[in-house]
Image (cartoon, rainbow, N blue to C red):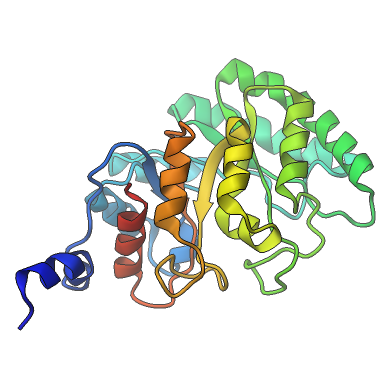
Length: 280
């Protein structure tokens, strides 16, 4: 029979397995989750689970789903846009991306939500400097509208090393956090920042805590996932997410942490544990 001290240590996982879940206790960070990782769980079911856990958001969805989120008292911390296959690294893709971003910024502002995701697209042989020049020119065309609507555009860095689908993106242009931040610096808008995905930064750079400290003023959002594999953020993988979250709080960040890992075990228990780990 387990003693009281032992039960206290495993209680969050036991409760999750029994149908109860960990509920956010601390208010230093806002918690969110990405639905695509939890398929085939229906969005309405995930929203109900997120509300039970005390999450503030279900993210990476589109405006047609905002009513589902609001029904559960949730926001959308990061709204989807044009997808990572196209972006601002190539001028011929600017018009399409700008059209989608303008529509999403307008919808997000009307809903009272904070951010829209954007991407670089693929390199396809261009140099760093030409790609950065194209990125800056494209993003400057939408930065003013984002400022007007008080919506933040978050440029996501993705890893180009891993070849598994949705675990990595070979030939993606913004596969370097320093380059991604420099693009935002050159755009020069308080409404154009980076999405710091801990999983992708770890794969491309390592040194996650120093990188987030170095770039703290340009980070608009965070994502999590275990390395390697993009699975649970528990002790089966190499990152210490408790320490990472404490370092994020120490920078003064009080925004959203988006859980974007793909569970290999029980989805409810995995999300419950991830939220517990990140609730510092």
